[in-house]
Structures are given as C-alpha cells and as structure tokens.
Length: 294
Image (tube, rainbow, N blue to C red; front, side, top):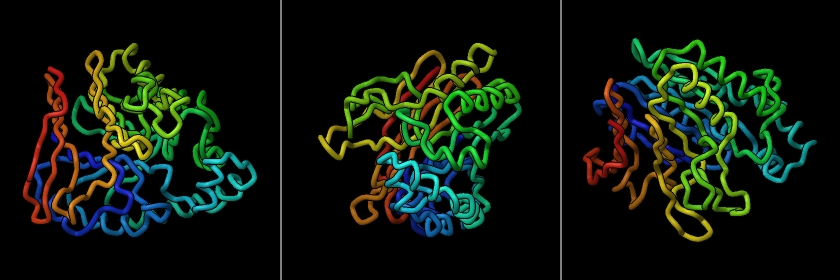
C-alpha cells in the first residue's frame, strides 16, 4: 500500500491541500495529530472533511483541549487539569464529527490489507515525564497510567494481523536521548529521550508475538528546535521497522509554494519513505528519499 503521511498541521491546511491529496495516488492518508494551531482543531477538521481518499487520524496534545487546560497539563496543575477534562469528551467528539469521513482513532485498530493492520496508539500523547490528560483518558478509556496503557496497546496487537503500522502522536522511547534524536527533548534537554514507554513496550510485544512492525509514524517533536535552530533526525530503523517523525512545522512555507508530507510505501518485501514538497498548484517541487528497508 502507498500512504500519504501528514505531520503536525497546527492550522496549516487549506483547499489546495485537499485538492492535491484527493488527486494523488495514495491508498490512504495518515495524520499524526495536532490539527489545532493552538487549541481549536475544528476549523482544520472541517477542511479535512472534504477529503475523498480514505484517512485515519490520531488526536494530538493540542486537539480537543482549551488553553487553560493545555497550560495546566504543561505546568502540572492537577485541579485545573481535572476541571479542563470535564468538557474534553464533548470537544473531541465535535472534532470527530467535523472531520468525518476521516476516522479519528485512539486505542483502536483497522485492517488495511489481508496481512496488514493499523494500530492507532494513545491519543493526546505529550511526553513520558507524566501521564498527560489522565482524567480524560480514565473517563473515556479506563486508562490512567503508562502500565494500563501498555496493557491496552498489547491487547490491540494480539488481535491484529501479522504485519502492523503504528500511528501515534508522540513517538516511542528508545530512539535516542539527544535534542537531535527523532524524539529527543530539545526544549528541556535534561529530559533526554522524550519518547513514550507504553508505545515502546507495545512494539516489543508485537515482535515477540510474531508480528512484523513495518512502520511507526508519529510527530509532536517538531523537526527544528525553537531554541537552538538545530534540525532533528526524522527517521530511524532497527530490525525490520522504520520509525518516522513527520512533524515539519510549519508544514506550509513560502506562501504555500512548499507544502510538506511524507510518502510511505509498504510492500511484502520492504518499506520506503520519501519527503515531498508540493506547490500551490499541486506540483511536486522537491522530493528526497528518507529511508528504505528491504
């Protein structure tokens, strides 16, 4: 299958993007979350609803939340975090309705082909230093810590096909602890590896139970550091798995003349990915191979 993978949108999506992806030769589109510029994801969700190519998405840490709630999560203010979660179910459902027919998932699976399945991981992931959006995740999924999240993800693996693609917002732990690592922490380097432990454990479980994890797709950690200006590594591979950080922010540059996404090809024998930029007319202006596993 051939996938178009779109990183953190943060408000950067318009009718030209929709037209391009409706005409492109992708079997499916995969969105790694953070549709909202800051906290309001509904405007982008309504634009995505005009897509005709099948698509799956996972909510990011900016989606379905309010500004006070997001700040409370960042600053770890328990009372405001709990109060903010009261309306989060309603906001996420509104976002889901607005982007239909795009499927918004979280702790969910979908068959992609006879032997290929999609696992949509923990929604609203924000980092491993604590279990963010705990009140909402407990209310919606009955999951209140990393251990419970790991169990749920492993159960999804157990009822999925042999070959798997993971769609996540934040990537897995274990891919490096420097600010330039795919999911290393650039805004607070002392945190080091900022990947999620539950996703890492689910990938390990998949391997020991006979699955092939073909690709792990995520974002959250933007490609260029706001603090140092350093560019992040966007891919990593080990065994037979390709890991991609898809979060080019902003994804639209030069007044629309450069619009970022990643093309991912998954075949029986290999996985290949390349970065593409298209212009306002939907013409490819640059492409660069990221990685290939054969």
